[in-house]
Length: 225
Image (cartoon, rainbow, N blue to C red; front, top):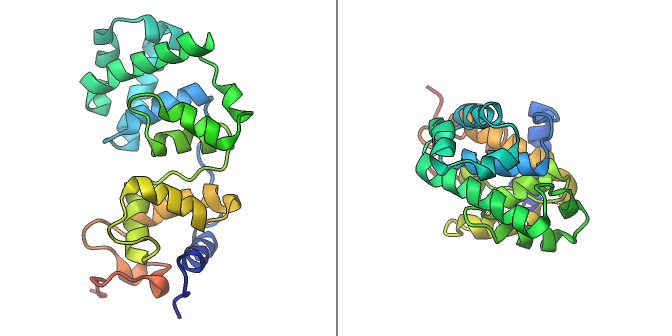
């Protein structure tokens, strides 16, 4: 029987995913400034190319101060593998310079001590930093209770009927933080992404092998082949 409310439904889904997948562990946490740059690079690309671009930046420049002082064309060349390099390179340089001008350094550890919404608002001021990027920095680099919604989570929550079909990604961030208890943000984010990547594909989802199909509202489920 499908839980009657979206909050109950997502709780049942996350509990089942924890049982099916186990407790997920992401890579070792990065410093907040590293996570910010990495997440900017991740936009409209995959994890492999994001990491290749990030590692190239780290190898070619001594530190983030060297990146912010480098010519834009050198940054663009370093991050080209991540795609949209002509946007991402100048954006990274601009964000790093703006942070340095305001803070006096590139250390974002102070965000851990700000009220959560103040820290989120501070990050969202930068061009190219949306709610997903801010939430990733807050959750994974600073251990703050924030829930990032990527393309997989947006698709899965729509099919599960957790969010209204017409709700946009920005509002889905807010909704998910209302529906899910903060203690479940970390594992919930990672397990929903895994569900989207391995089973709930954009085309031809593998519904027969979905661990949470009993709570799914998707009308175009695939049948066992």
